[in-house]
Amino acid sequence: MLSMVGPVPLIGEAAGAGLGQWTNSPEEWGQGWDALGKRYWSNLAYNAVRQTITYGGSLALHEDTRYFGSRRSGFWPRAGHALLSTFTARHADGRDLFSVSGTAGVIGAAAISSAWGPPSWRGPGNIAENAGISFASTAATNVVREFLPDIFHRPRK
Image 1 (cartoon, rainbow, N blue to C red):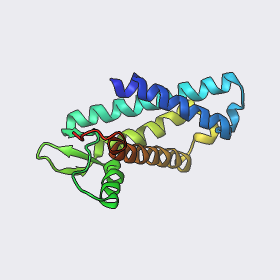
Image 2: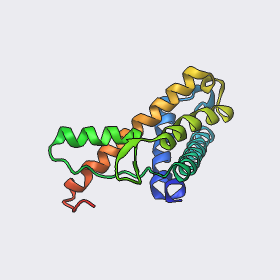
Image 3: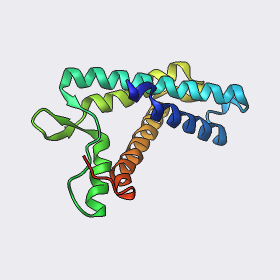
Image 4: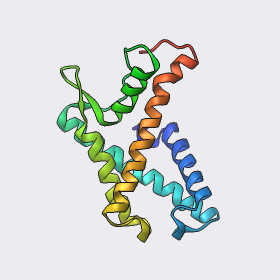
């Protein structure tokens, strides 16, 4: 539930709305407080759809889609683990395998959000672009999750 309405998504989606406002994306929404509100609520709705699809799929497929830090040492092995974790989930046998639920959550949210978004969000190319942006932001977040404990000198779980 915190992944849908907790502090991280509330702040993260506000940052995303601010970035969309700064780049005027989508252009159809224009500028101003109303446009910023549309971007923010759209981002929150996208996240809610993504998390709902991912959670339902993870229950059915027995996938644990949380991020698990790398047990490797060295920057590149750990960074590679963080990036690959964008597309993997922990399974009951302890292995990290392709995450059907996580991938379906991103693609499903990108497709469904095109229904409430402006015309520039519609069509397979735009849906793929939105999914790609979502995968990229997840990969960046995973890199932060991997290395942030080192910065604060906290033990890793």
